[in-house]
Length: 251
Image (cartoon, rainbow, N blue to C red; front, side):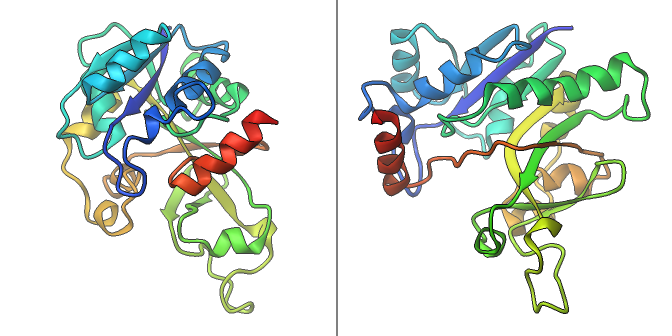
């Protein structure tokens, strides 16, 4: 079974233009992410799917394979689907370009979710998509709309994802005990055939409202298996967050 990790990268960014090529550490931001993904054991290959020649040139400079895709894609998943459409691969991992501190072990765990479901003929064998979640550190994170929450059922399938506090603790007037909440990590695993299927569907209503692409699967009735991990890392969305990462890296 062939497993690829694909890092979708676009040059434009509303809050931090050109962030994937920021280089205050001496390495491109996307290079840090690529190097972390390369430390994972299960992916046979790690590639970058980019929308701009400048990203492709940067990737070449540090030895990464890069595929140029259309700049018109609305999501990283759509970009990945174009990159692997004609490739011989079974499981595709979507690793966000702006997560330079991603844990390689988490990448492996995510891949293992779909591999085991296929090989062991479990009830989950027809599941085409998986993702990860972790516990929150404090209630302020639970209340933060920039941090996505996920609710799962007893079999660890996602019920819903939201920027809002879910579940809503009525007795507490919103966010209750931190242990009752799960933080969604923006990394996904897809069986290739499912990836091509889901990206061929139009954006769903909930997806547009919450601006969460995984809701397209939920709204169309496709299960998403959720694995739970301990280690989390924040992505880089703003120049301030990048500056903090640079400080941590230099230490």
